[in-house]
Image (cartoon, rainbow, N blue to C red; front, side):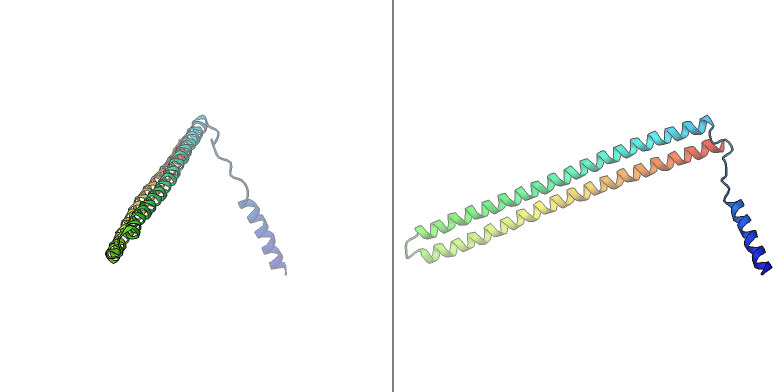
Length: 162
């Protein structure tokens, strides 16, 4: 029992000694304060730049998506217009030429659908490319911010070491 009590008391004093705050020797030196201020200023500048790049990238992606949607809508309208013309010709055709006109209209329909699909695929690919580029810009900005933060920490440590 005595050994247990002695161990508990010793561990209490040991943990109390370890928990004492360590005061830096010259933490309030002007060089350290100056380095911290410079690091904070550079970090804030880098974060603002990163936010600006992020906003620009997001705007670019939104614009690309809207443009792709417009291109798809135009392609759909063009296809519908082409199909309507072809079917109008079928209606106007003589009874003898109706089968021939109907076959031609079906061919026109197929071509119009193919053209529409091609335009949609190209628009989506272009929008996807823009998204990838925007993501790369965001990643680069984030990396630059992290670099500036690390440089600031290194400058502060160097100032403390002097």
